[in-house]
Image (tube, rainbow, N blue to C red; front, side):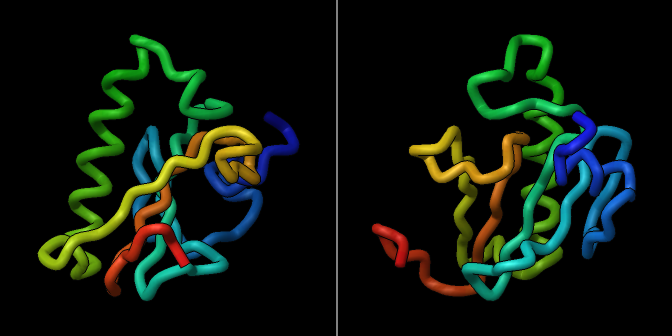
Length: 114
């Protein structure tokens, strides 16, 4: 999408603090972190939200999982634990209409968040 901020980050039209990139995904530190470690994993393919995923995206989801686990280990949050959040649509707190996975760690993640 021409006006999607995450699509622009994926093609490097907008700078971001990239911590991972491959042919299908980018990962970068959140600009408004809610935990000591807070990064996003974003498919380069424009997918509006979780509801838009289909059977053809199974491989992409497996890749997202591998990247999240790898980065959690590299960032030192795997042993103590971390949270993965997918906001979906307005009532779910989604502010960018492009599927993305928030990974938060480095502190106790209470519930409800706050």
